[in-house]
Image (cartoon, rainbow over all chains, first blue to last red; front, side):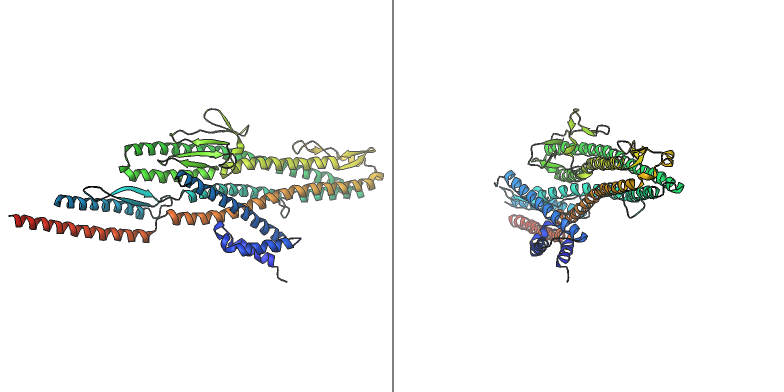
Length: 81
Length: 434
C-alpha cells in the first residue's frame, strides 16, 4: 500500500516554502496533519519531514504575526488607526 | 498673458527634465540590488499656473524590508550553526572511524577477552591498549571541541568589530541625512542615495545580529537589539538617530560584550545572525563537553574489576581532562581467576550503561544538527521568496521605465509644439501691430 503520509510530506517539503503558499496548500497541509494524527509510529524520513512541516507552520505563523504588527504600527504612524 | 503661457510651458519643460532625470537614474540602477526605484511627484502651481516636481518618492516597502532583514538574520544564524554542527557531527560520526562507539566497543570487548583468559599476555596488552585508546579518543574530541570554541570566540570578536564598523557608518549616514535635509530637499538625488546606503548597511548589520529599527520623518534609522521581540521592554540601542552609536567590545575570557560606557550587554540579547549563532555555539559546545565529562564519569564509576578482593575502577578522574588509567600491567598479572565470572557480569553491565550514555549523548548532538538543518532549509526558502518579492516591489522594472520615458518624450514633444505655436502667435501679433 502506498504511504500517503510520506507522499504528502514529500510534496509539502518541495512546494511549501513560504507563508504566501499557505492559502494554496491548506487542503494538503490539513490532510497530511490528519494522516499523521492517525498514525502511531513514524519512519525516520517521516519524522524529519513532519518536524520540518511543523517548524514551517510555527515559523510562518510568526511571520504573519509580525506582518500584522508591522501593518498596525504603520497605520498608527500614518494616523489611520 | 503671453508671458504667463510661456512661463507655464517652461515649468512643464523643467518638470519633464527632472522627471526624466529620475527615470534615467532608475534605468541606470536597474542592476543595482541595493537601489530602490523612485518616482517623481508632480504638483500644480497656483497663479500663474504650471507644474513642478515637488518631491521624489522612494518606492520602498518597509514592512517587506523588515521581514526580509529578520529572515536574513535568522538565516545567517542557522547557516553558521549548521556549519559548525557539520564539523561536530563529523567528530562523533560512528559510520566512520571518527565515532567513539568503536573505541568503547573495542575496550569492553578486550576487557571481556581478558576476563575469559586472564593469563593471556595478548589480552592484557589489548585491555590496556584499548583503554588508553579510549582515553586518548575522548581527550582528542574534547580538545577538538575546545578548539572550535576558541575559533568561534575569535570569529565573535571579529564580528563585533564588524558591527562597530557598520554602526559607525550608519551613524554617519544619519548625520549626513540630517545635513542634506537641512540644506534643502532640492538636492533630492543625494538624499535618496543616502537612504539606499542606509538600507544596505541595515541589511549588512542584520547578517551579524538580530536588529529592529525605526525611521524618523527624515529617514534616519535608530537601531535596537531586543531581548525577546520588539514588543518586549528589554532592548539595547546600537545606533541613535542623532548620529551616535554604541561601540561594543567583546571579552573572550568572560564571554561578555561591553559598550562604550563600560556597561555590560547580556549575551542573551544576541540571538540571531552570526553573532547570535556564535554565542549559541559557545554554549552548545559547553553542553557537549559536559556530555563528554558525563561519559567519562560513567566510565569511571561503572567499569570495575576485582583486584585484591575489592572492586577497583579501571579508570580514575572526574572529567575528560584528568581521565587516566587506574590499573597497571602488574595489576592484571596478579588478577584472581575466581572473580572472572562476577567481573564479566559487571563489565557487561558497564558496557550497556556506557553505551546508553554515549547513545543519548550522540542523539542529542544529532537532534540539534537535524533541528538546525531543518531551520536553515526553511529559512533559506523563505528568504529566497522574500528576496524575490522585495526586488519585484522595489527593484526597477525596465519595461515600466521605458513606457514612462516614452510618455515623457511625447509630453515633451507636445510642449515643444505648443512653444513653437506660441512663438508664431507672438510673431503674428507683433506683425499685426506693426
